[in-house]
Image (cartoon, rainbow over all chains, first blue to last red; front, side, top):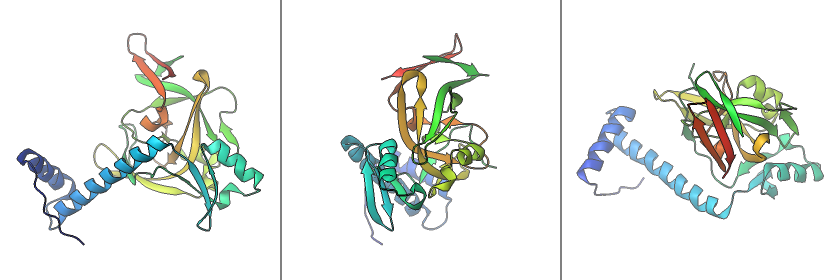
Length: 111
Length: 130
């Protein structure tokens, strides 16, 4: 684990501490956890934008090995059928990484 | 192309497709899905529809949705396609489900490439390609 010394403007620090306390509580290490999550989100967003600028692709892998790559899911499905590969046996991912957490709208309710 | 409101909520006509297993719902016409601008994902559907479209047979992708009151909803998803038949447009993305989801919700990633206007005077959602 690394230690970083950063300088923030007062208003940013105040807001950060307020949000951190609200979402992560006031236990030891909660501010670090908050900043780490925020940075993870930002890094992912930067990666997404950079890949989006190049174009999204869909990749099928079997046992960790790439077996097909296409510009769309329709095309990927066609390729798998031609290769006689059952889509149920492959892992499909996008070249644009998925966020681990996204906001749900007001209509989505947790039970 | 325009659709009406469902009570006070704007809806869009869509077809949901699993292009990997070649299943679509509905087979004819379209399904009125709620446009949920607060949802940052692609498409949320009820479990029944997820299973009917055979997304449950594909390798699951898990993630978490954060509700407005900071509660977490764990979802299971698979990549699929939304088709907007009326405007001849489609988008690929992660289609998610959870037992608490009772309606089909199109998120902001689901409307990529569309220009959508909400006409509250006529209670219409008007959509075209950008």
